[in-house]
Image (tube, rainbow, N blue to C red):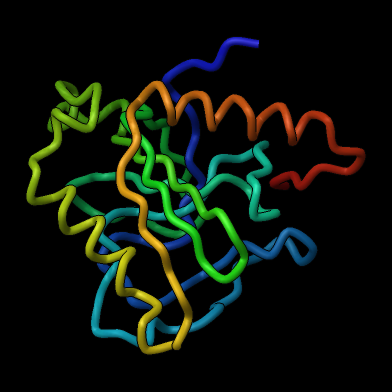
Length: 170
């Protein structure tokens, strides 16, 4: 099964938020998981790719780099441009990095190299410290290529398809 470089991302947390919202699949609604303990904000819209199942037991995490935040529950048609490799107390915690497919400000972005270096540094810094005051360990491995991100997306979709009772959005 081929994986296109464009996928939907289901937004849980808007850019600039300190609130960590999570979609509760059992209840079919959002929950406030916590406020970030550190004085940092999400550097982009953050959520997951529907119909995936990552190594950490959740749908594949995704960060959408965009100019203005959307809202929890928004589906964004997003172009995959790379991956961010890290792990936490639950193990591997990969994030794919995307840009909105329909936003002309990001139309030129196809790879991570097309994104300003400073913005990538901000993203890496955020994920390296956002759990510090919670006393949770995070190990940042760095960015991965678009090809690596698409391979992760494909594997996580195949894992989801092989499940007996996969998580689905309503």
